[in-house]
Length: 276
Image 1 (cartoon, rainbow, N blue to C red):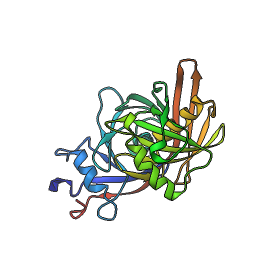
Image 2: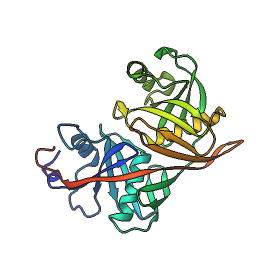
Image 3: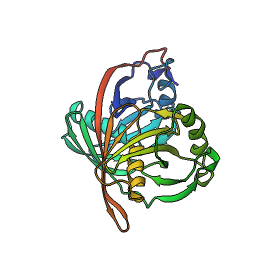
Image 4: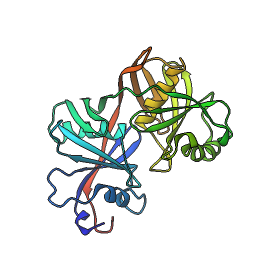
């Protein structure tokens, strides 16, 4: 990391339980590389600490562009990160409450109502059911679905306890049917057709996170594909918060898909010389 990261203004934000470092790069004359910045600043205890970096830049196609980088510097699509970016754009940067954001999944429409943000997302391709879970010692079959990034959904009668999660999740994250990149892994308990409980192991972080927006999308749509869930679906995540997924199921798959949740401002400051 170059010394120009020192003094860089940032905001710490939280979406649904995921915490992020948000940086507005629009007026930076010599911006650091965001992937490098993510690797340095997201280190917990050693730096600011976060699940990832939300990088704001100008756009010719939308109100703003939002790039996201995991804590390891890998680029990804992050639903909760974009919820935070939408609220920031409205309340901090003066954009309207209904706005358009350029993302890795195209230009998406967002609506901000206080701390609550709703984001329309592209409908995924049909889920791929029938993936073996035997390598992780689990019965049944998993469901692969890409909701902006790849997920492997495991529907269970009860969520795994910590030892079972720690043993199974890293194995399934590298499922051979999802090579070479693997996938995020979501363990899902169906409380009723409109309520799910979700635990997610995220690639790029290589551990459990308190929430995943794309994971909740994957969980709801995978459960619906087996006729176990119906819109709207409230997903309770590990951090205790709830994300809501809405969709219309058709004979061809899904349409009118959206993710809604809370985006919170935690703190703001500048990067210290020892943070990198």
